[in-house]
Image: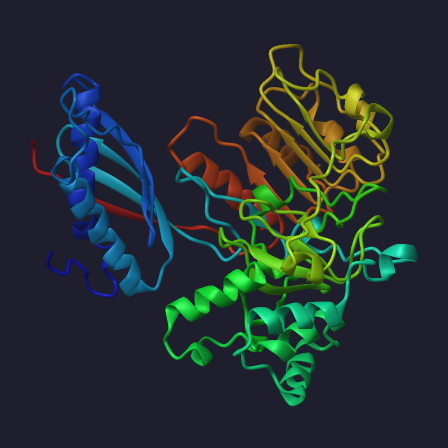
Length: 473
């Protein structure tokens, strides 16, 4: 395919957008049965990685899968805009257009603001961030102090037995020198646990030591029971490993029950990645275990999980010798505690009163078919930091002013309007978001978002208006 990238300024050139607008207009006319009012409205978002458009792609004939030629015009048009984004150094852009029957077009482009996270799946603004670099509370949480039995290695931890087993399995392996181990410790800023040192003294796990022999590398991984990192590959699994957005991260909570082997953290300065399991998920040595764990236990940080980790083995010795930890049993009735993340909706908990307790951190009010709900039961709760409420579910949005500990608030446009008009937007917020369910036109949401950003003296979402003509179909 020919290079479709435009000049550096072409992202704000109407010609860049004409092919995409033609595709969207044709789709809208198909949906409207060929008849439309004086104009149609279309919208979407395009980023360097893909696009989301208010578009219903034609269904292929029965028994036939969608072919590239079925969507070629859409792809060519969207990739034209992507090329212009790349040349302009812009990650993504939202747009809305009104296309008149005469062919006249008013196109609105919404450039990203450094204070606004990208939306997901629609052209509306994502979270509005009040402070540069601010992250949700779970991403700021440090490990609890390790005390008692958890501060010691498991009884099964045996560096000498581990080294002996590895030497027998890997007689030709090249071990790391003490200088190499010391260099790794200096880089990490702490001493490696004895088991990890014992392992690297037997094999330094460098791919070049296998001299291009894939089978040799596979035999080493089989002998260890995991895919190893070399000393240079060791790294701390702190909270930066699990990146997030405010809309997702603010809904999480760090929760470590008294009987937990692993602390329910996002990341820890005591989690040290040293390899991957057969599925490619990272394994870590845990130097900050939970109350019922052991220092040096082996944990797995599964992809898709934002907090916590799964206990794999009580020690590195156990892992290599195949003695894996038993799966944790769910808490019994006497061990269950009130949830720190509570969801009130038609399919879950049925009232705000039912979830109100001093440890509550996150309250999410979803789709609701009863009378609007009061927030009175959660006023004054010391740890409540996140509130999300589906449009129309709050009896009195001004009650939010009594939630003095909020750092993240997600509401529908009408509820935000009430707070803004009353000057009652909580002062302690670090981020906020506007709910946009089922609506594509980003303009009213951008307008409202800019009002909130202006309140915080933050960079606004810049709107560029272009006018042009589309030839009649």
